[in-house]
Length: 306
Image (cartoon, rainbow, N blue to C red; front, side, top):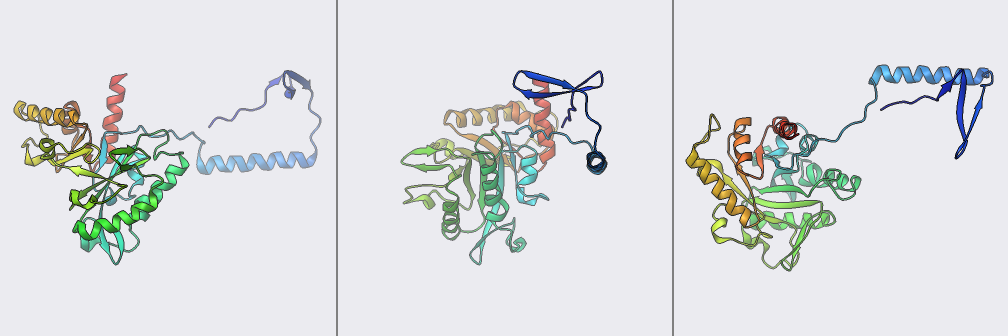
């Protein structure tokens, strides 16, 4: 932040008296009280600068629209670490315990208070309010991938009931139409398309699999495909991807894009060489646990493009 003092010329101070009119005057001798106020203010300002350092404008992060925070809740600051690195997609695993949707990777790891609402839905709503309809200021639709860790018959109805309380910020689906909003929820894990049966308004989309590229369900139902990398590929991210596997990857991406879907691979290598290879092949989302690394990766790509 830059502080600009009053203009001076030849010991005189300029002030604005009215639009288009300037008055020049020699300042009157300061009164003792004014002198003390000025001196006190200077001391306070100096103390603030010593403690806090120079005030600077905080630049927003470069939005990593092709980055997905895998198991985001395992970071020190769930959601916020990803947001600070510009991520536009995060993942939360949930269990239904005593009527609450608790976030954890395994059932034995659940803790009271770490609910889906407290860690994700409530802070996301606050940001949407702050940024007038977006999770990032001026940013795109944000994706919250929710992994059902129990039988969907029990877990999904409880989740849907919670999501209805956040309808003001969620993308919804009805009558084969999509109403875009700040946040797109996608359901993965122990899910089945049957869980949406009978819904006139749907508050979430469905995480597809590679087999869905053959059956070709509506893209409004299955907007992206998630696949285990090792189920189709053997390359471990070192050196160059074999030509045969690269060709297979590009074919998957092309088919998904033709159907209007994004592609994400999990259980994949998590290093810059791998990120570059799948990025160049057109994969839409880099699935990562390394938030800072992927954020830097996209920052480097932006610098190279200049």
